[in-house]
Length: 220
Ligand SMILES: Nc1nc2c(ncn2[C@@H]2O[C@H](COP(=O)(O)OP(=O)(O)OP(=O)(O)O)[C@@H](O)[C@H]2O)c(=O)[nH]1
Ligand SMILES: [Mg+2]
Image (cartoon, rainbow, N blue to C red; front, side, top):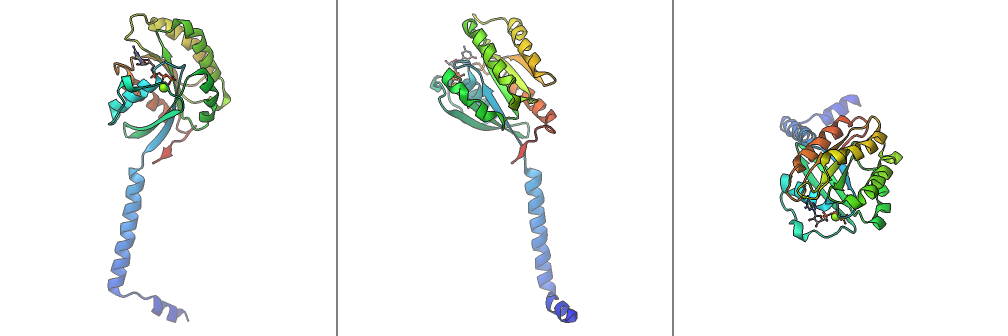
């Protein structure tokens, strides 16, 4: 019986070669696919309406990939804008959601999937600084956001009526104390002039990678 089976399964030398070649091909294909897979992190862009979130995202697209909207075509976000952008051999999937007060109740829906948060501040909007602080506090004290890196962007640095970066840092670093051991930073940028945009993406990517063991990326 065994002998019969063996005899029956004995392959013709040509067939063996073909089978081996096929196996090698599939192995190589699998290895290549795995080797070629990139880490993908999701980043949530938050901040009050008019802070410059969508402008920041469009400028990121301009910096790292093709096809971005020109600033004059950007309108207030009612739903969400999603863009996956390749940065330093990784993929950053940005979720830009509307900042109007009525839309902020939707933010927590995104927390669970976020590997990091970018909070955009309008450096020229003194009147809403208090509202901005309150909003950020609500975000960073949410337990679903616990442990993930938070980058605060003091945007619109090109405006003459902007608040001093040092003053903004003082206010927002106090809130960042809530972040405990988490990585956080205030960076000055001008989304409109594409200044500081690349630095922001690189800063957050380093922190996302550092936090990889706590919140693993997806592989794409
Ligand atoms: N001067 C200046 N204006 C900016 C800058 N970034 C954005 N703006 C302007 O601010 C306004 C609002 O920008 P958006 O990007 O739509 O703001 P948003 O945060 O996405 O707003 P919502 O979608 O309503 O939450 C637009 O008129 C932009 O051109 C900047 O760096 N400097
Ligand atoms: Mg927007």
